Image (tube, rainbow, N blue to C red; front, top):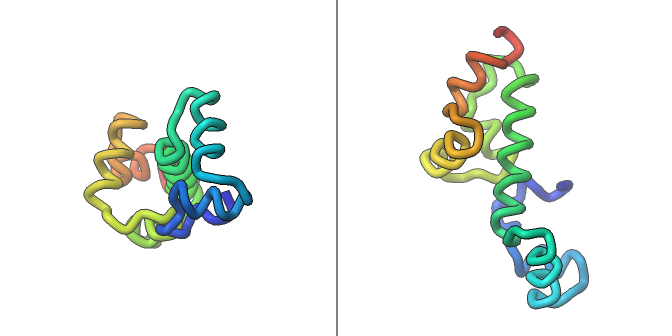
Length: 99
């Protein structure tokens, strides 16, 4: 979670951080019922959701996305909508600090 803003955070980087092989990491995540990439994506989406609720409305969503490791805002919007049934801007309008 501390490295969630790092866009290079992937299975290889996570395995290196944890001091294990990628195969060991994949086995550990298989026991959880999700993949490594899926878990990282979900953590990033949750972090962005929290930022959208609490960050000042004047702070651009693109900046918040970067703080969560998202470089591609179109991809972010698709993933966010799939997870929360709203785009990031719709979510901010409904649940943000000025809502």
